[in-house]
Length: 206
Image (cartoon, rainbow, N blue to C red; front, side, top):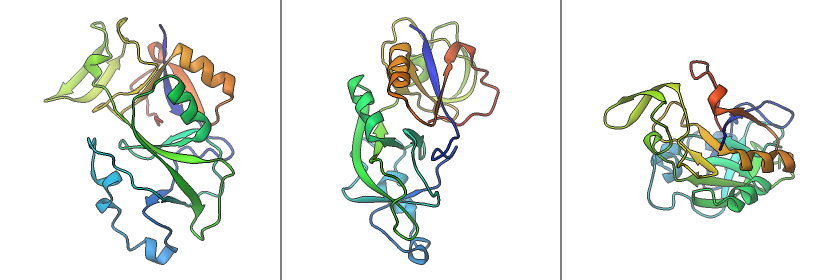
């Protein structure tokens, strides 16, 4: 089965890198700047075992419009549209926790007609994904510091996953997932075959 790397694609309403911060409630700009977001569990914990989100969260963004299907907020969690979340669930993606969020501008104005969710995935280690013919370097105990070649092993059967402790923690999907995503008309995503990707180039994963 062929696999694809999910990369950020810039388009109208699809910033290459999103600029929002996830807060516990809405704050006006001058107050938001005083908040130490590092104290929030969804930013503080790298790969927490517990549920990192609370209810009624707010993404306060600098962007004027959101119309993308998925963006990486950090290696901790992603911002996912309701439609793409349904696709992820359809293919049994390893979702650890998920909560609907309010998306607005710095003055509290809605910037999207779509519904969005903060989603944390359970990632996999590269050794559980890579075939023996892959070439990568690990800095002990498990941090991947470089990938030269990634070949997905035949026994790997997940349709969507994120690779932990790797450069940018890339997300990959199966060909079946890719075809379903194209059919639904996803926005802001570029799908690149893993076997053709040049890992030495800079990239923005989602």
